[in-house]
Image (cartoon, rainbow, N blue to C red; front, side, top):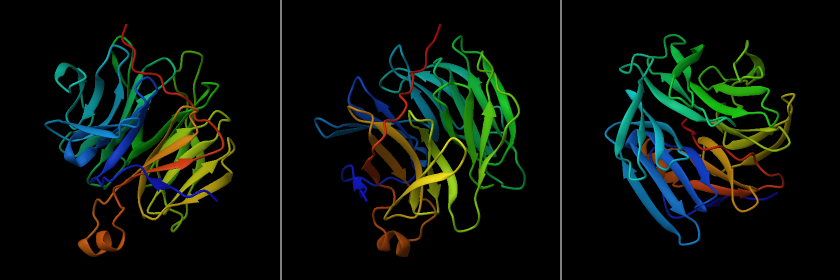
Length: 290
């Protein structure tokens, strides 16, 4: 069994949204609670950080350069230095109670971002999509904490997870990429971990970071667990594929809500891990503006 290895000497607070840049041979990720986007250039082992004025839930690289960034209050277009250029839309949830969380792009280059309902008293979060002409649209509700966004290789299915509710959903997409009614892909029992961020491989299998579960799991298109990879930390947050052959899995983890004793016992909590795998991951489109 292959073992995960630390990418470099770094631990964050709440690293999320790992994003591979094929052209740069670099890994990007957000530290949500620190309001940062990080970049690690693998050939030169160079680490750089962009800081923002509020939490960065998720982002995507833009085809034109720079980022589309979902922060607590709004979604913005920025340049490559993180300078805000244009506000795309406000947070459709109450930003005092729900911040943006997980997000990504589809094969059409549209950006998706979901929120996380902070109070936890009901499913008050939403998933929205930013179209190529920058039109925002809420496409799903009845969510506690949106995560796990990924798309099947044939573009016919959208996968999401609701982490606090311990469920992965599957939603059919029509020929225009519009969602139908979602249904359960897989539910998790207590002790299995909660499905957090995810990625899709070229065989149509769904890789999920199981928060509080110490592991990454790979599921078939029918929801059967095919493989699992154990981690030396309790809370992985998300995975993405990268590397020259797209067969390296990058794994973000967190130390959020951990006391000093637990951090001392598991000091790699918050690190970025790499894991060689035998199947290539799906490449992600940048955000495309028209």
